[in-house]
Length: 228
Image 1 (cartoon, rainbow, N blue to C red):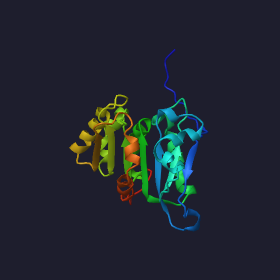
Image 2 (cartoon, one colour):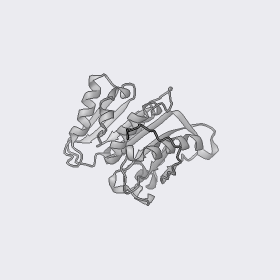
Image 3 (cartoon, rainbow, N blue to C red):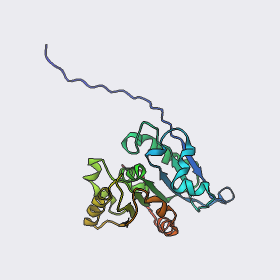
Image 4 (cartoon, rainbow, N blue to C red):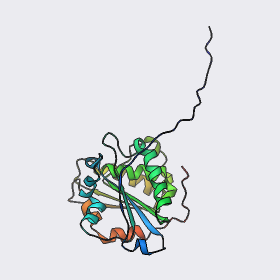
């Protein structure tokens, strides 16, 4: 009996869920204007189903302590058995689309930042949905995807500010430096801040710095789309 090539074609539905924290500026309900959107990706230690864990670091920590921002902040929570990147790709894409549909978002000012595992997620989603973001700010992260690393030219027109601690032994400095060097080779819009005495926590100084937000919110992307 001979072998015959066959093909399976079937439309399937997939249910996705993703918990997240939402922050809206003080005047949001009284204003008709659209606001910048900053998506914050947490590290591996905050995975799970308890969004209170997200308040220990970064932008959610500052908001929980009473700091006000002039942007919409969204902090999704990665499930405990997954990792930011390809494993939570559908969830991330649909969260971003839902935020744009549900809140008063200025699509020319959507920003992505994250720390550690969230730094990896920032690089990956920034690559995957490069035309959706006005700027990226990965902190002590890297880029595991070989496909993404082979096509770094998609970052060429996206402003990126990279942060890392020189003494980081959890995610070594080279994880950021190799990408930054490759981006510099193609004249990308990349800045690199290395904290000489910092270990893995290079995010506290970054998120506490008003200059970080001034830079981030000054970036615009007038060609927003979800082209993959």
